[in-house]
Image (cartoon, rainbow, N blue to C red; front, side, top):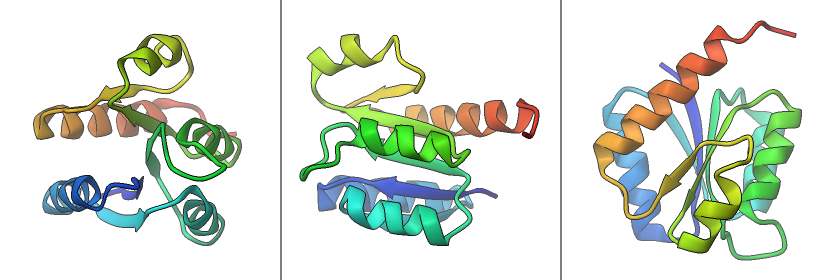
Length: 122
């Protein structure tokens, strides 16, 4: 299965996502900040980034997703802010609106991984 980096500043949400993806057979790395996520992206073979749009700190999830894209890592953004859904939905990353069902999480992850596998390698 895939190695997925989950970046979320809510411990409770992070735990649930990590548990769900792990139970689905994925290797899951966790980060509570974009800073830690950037270190993991530089040092680990990551297949997919799942990041909260509104991370605390100077680097938001959408900026982290752009950085991951530059490294060739596809991303999914999550948000609980309805205003961001409209603003980001036209962007180049899938958006998963909070609260989401765990089945939605798994379906979105599978779709993103399948899309990434179908793209020609550079």
